[in-house]
Every structure is written in C-alpha cells, then in structure tokens.
Image 1 (tube, rainbow over the protein chains, first blue to last red):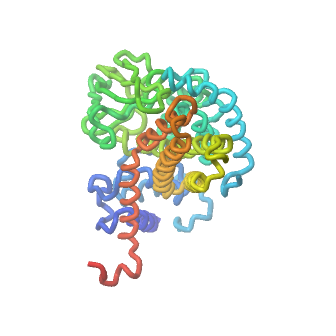
Image 2: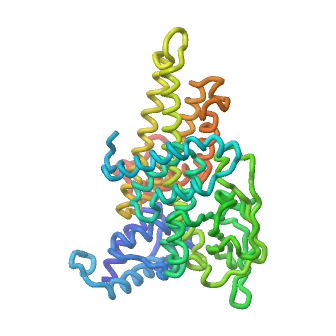
Image 3: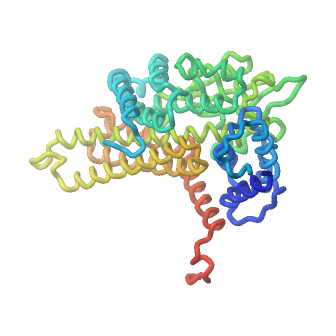
Amino acid sequence: MNARVRGRVRAFLSGYAGGRHFTDRTSIFEEGLVNSLFALQLILFVERDFDLTIADDDLELANFASVEKIAAFVCGKVAVLPRHGTEAWRS
Amino acid sequence: MALIGVSAAHRERQQDVCAFVERVVMPEAERIDREERMPEAIVASAVEKASLGSTDAIGLGLLHEALARGCASLCGIVTVQTMVSSAIARCGTRAQREAWLPRLTSGGAQAAFALTEPEAGSDIAAIGARAVRRGGEYVISGSKRWITAGRSADVFLVVAKVGDAPTAFLLERTRPGLSVRPVAGMLGMRGAMLADLDVVDCVAGDTDVLGPVGGGLSVVGNFALDVGRYCIAWGSVGLGQACLDATLLYATSRKLFGSRLGDHPLTRRKLANMVARIEAARLLCVNAGWLRDQHDPDSVAETCIAKYVAAETCVRAASSALQMHGARGCSRETPVERYFRDAQIMQVIEGSSDVQQLLIAERALAARQSHPLAQDRVSPVFV
C-alpha cells in the first residue's frame, strides 16, 4: 500500500513543483519546491484522495515534510480506520 | 437570477440576510462610515444571521455578498470572524474549540486576526513578533498593525516566531501585556474598527498555541487567509452590485439632454460592462465555492483567481458609478463616494491584487512545466 500512496503523492506534488526534481526524501518545504499555499493544498489532497480527516494533532509539519513522510502518515492513519471497500489504492 | 451551484435553499437564506441588511444595516451605513464605528449589536446580528460554522462554502459566500452590498466594513469584520473561527475549527484543540466556537459563531464574541506588522505585510514571513520560551511558558512581544476589529475583538489570533518558527496564539483581549490603539482616517472601510495592537511581555501557555508550533503561517495562517480571500471575493461582488444598484437607480431618474440618463448609448455601454463583469466575478466565486465544498485542492488557486477578478471588478464598478453620478457621486449625497473608497480596500485586504497575480501566474507556470503540452516539445519558434 505504501508504494501506491507514494505514487499518488508524487503525482500530486509534481503538478506543483514546476518540473523541479525531487525524490521521496526531498524536504518539500525546506527545499523551496512549492509556494506558500501548498501546505493547504496538500492537506486537502490527502483528506480527499485518501478519505481521511486530518485532526488538529495530525497537523504537525513533520507529517508532511516529504513524499516518504506523507505516505507513512497516510498508511498509519488508514491502518486504524474501517475499510470502505471502494479505495482501490489500498490494495 | 439562477446560478449553477446555487440552490433554492441558498437563495432563501441569502434573501433573509438581504432583508436584514436592508432593514438594519443600510440605514446605518453612512453613519458607521462617518463616525468610524461599528455598533456591536449589528455585528452580533450579522454573525448570527450568517450562521457561521453551519453553512457550506457557497452559502457562506452569498452571505458575505449580501453584507457587503449594505456595508463593506461589516463584511470586513464578519470576514475576520470567519477566518479566526475557521482556523480554530480546523487547527484548534477540543478545549479551544469548545471555549471559542460557540461564542464566535453565534455573535457572542468578536475575533481579530493579528498578523500584519509595520515591516511585514505581503512579505509576511518577515514578521518580527517573538515568543520566547521561558519557564514552561511563552513570553510574546511585538507590534501588529491595521488589525480589523482590533478595537472590539474579544480574542486575537496573534502570530509570533518561536525561534525561527512562526506560531499562532489565541490571546483574549484582557490578557496582561495586550493593548490596542484605535486607527482612524483610513481611505475606506472606516467602520471596520481598525486598531494597532501592542504586545509587551504577554505570557501564554501551551494551551494558547493554535495549531502546531511552526505552523503559524503555513497551516493556521494559510487556512485563515484562504477563507478570508474567499469571503472578500464575495464581498467585492456585493460591493460591485451595490455600485450597479445605485447606478441603475440614478440612470432611471436623472434627466440629461432631455432624456433619461439610462437612454444614452454611452450610459448603456457602461451599464452593460458593469452587469457582465459583476456576473462573471460572481460565477468565479461560485466556482471557487463549489470546489471548496468538494474539498478540492484546486479550490485554493481558484479562490485566488476569484478574489483577484472580483476585487478588480469592484473597483471598476465603483469608478463607473462615480463617473455616472458626476459631482453628486463625489459628495455624500449618495453612497457612491463611500463605495468608491471601500472598493479600493477590497484590492488590498486578505492578499493584495499584486500578490494574487503572483500566485496565479506561479501556479500556471508550475502546471505547464509539470504537464507540458505536445507543442512544448517542439523547438520554440519565437526565440
């Protein structure tokens, strides 16, 4: 599941990175890969595409620092959520 | 007029707020501007009518349109209330939500968003306010400028740096170390209760931190400003509509060269431009609202576009209204003079038009570079 999540996060990030190279470990914010609005767009993306609600104590920047961190965060969250059976990215 | 995405229920609710605005707000709007003071009862009623926290994005937008049509200052104050309420709802702890949201969404308390500083406006990362960790608490010092509702707010969302990390704090007005100085004589939105805020050795605990330490701009500030841009986009449409309403009234009553002003072709061209541009701006706002209700990441960029276009449209509508009213429009005989001044503010608050243009262009360039079209792979012809 982690690889599929990474793939989707990578695809989303590439739409905002303006062709700049990044790896799964690239620090999205510290490397200046995106503009100041991106944190909000990223949170909306994660919630919508992975059917999650990001609670106040999940809003730590460390959870969203890189593709790797985002995928780990998403996988950690969905592991404790009931499965709807409609999310193809889980399988 | 029917609009895609706007339901009958939305319209019904907007009409209820419009009736309130026409009955309560419009008769007071000139005095609010002249005395530079907003009655607390009007804010409380407006917030209660707006049902902040229980409406969807399109409903929220329509309500801000209705408020700005009557009084742009009131729209500005309710926008800030919406920004802070949304930030608390999204980033606040359960205790913070329980402490503030019932009061803020019912009109029982007012909020202000204290971000701008003397040396940090659009370059907001340059804020100088500091929160120093001392004995398990934060000691906050700094100066905030042009804070809407600063004169009347019960709670301030203050952004200060912990080390290099911008962090948001919720500080009630009575907190020792906070003092406000009213700001008067602004160009427009004179009833928005502006104040400068001085923070001197103000002590805050961990429970006063809103959102993550270091997330004061990227998370909390972003949430608040995104909502603020959206509300001001709709407010710009409302103020533009007020300009159009005033101009239509004048065009049907004023005689010029033996016929009604509205019968002259030049007048009609101006009116047509006003109608079409306001309608186009409204549609962009509806589009942004629809995307927001879908929690679509593109809603952020679409809100920037809506805010930019609506604010520019509002200024053009105000300018046209002023021209059509002639000297009367430059006097206090009609509300057009106030509309003209207030419209300029729409281009500045919650992200200036210049900043919106930068963000819109940056997004377009990044999207094109990330997803080049087929013709981009051919050698450029115009080098």
